[in-house]
Length: 238
Image (tube, rainbow, N blue to C red; front, side, top):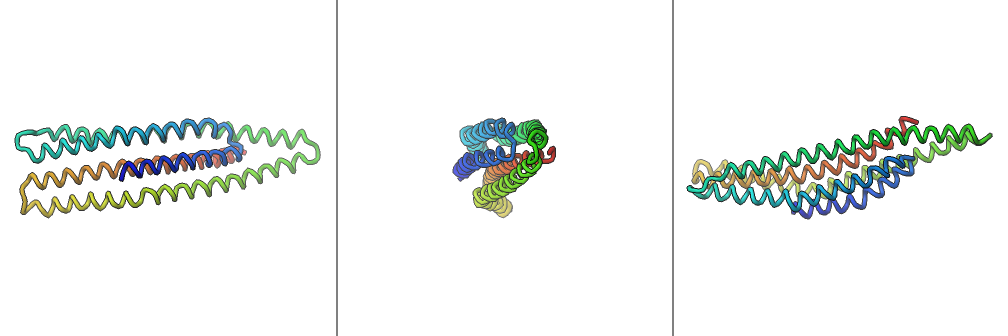
């Protein structure tokens, strides 16, 4: 379920981001679109593939080690399981931070360039072309403003679709996590300690999987929000 959800999110991003960046170019943000598109698609591909091929198997290995440690009285390797689980959380935090930092830095640099370039072009048109230059400059501003509104609307729809893709798996994982923790709490007075520890281990596993899916969803939402913000920032320079 986690892999299918991540693949659906990444596949939808492949369709949405080129459309969003095309609309970004219509607002005059040529430098932003040309710089952000390869970076954004590369990061999404790399992160999605890394999670499905490396992080999720790492979680499964950690769970298997934890189960062996819980049911065996002689093999005690639960520290390795905890280390692997905490490593997954740290990796997710670092990846999400780098993703947001790279996009924010690129967006800040390129949006200022686009804004100043567009302002210079408008001033040149208004000055060089006699009589109708000022009218043409104002008309270009109106067209750019309409394109910006359309881009913001597409971005908002994209965020809603991303939420609709991931909301059901997130709810399922939340219910499973809470169910295992409740089962562990109920079994503690009446059951063997190994059973309680095993149920707690499964609850921790689903909690990590829940963190993975939420991280990917938040990453894509933040990426779309940053793309929307770029043209709005460049419009401020005009």
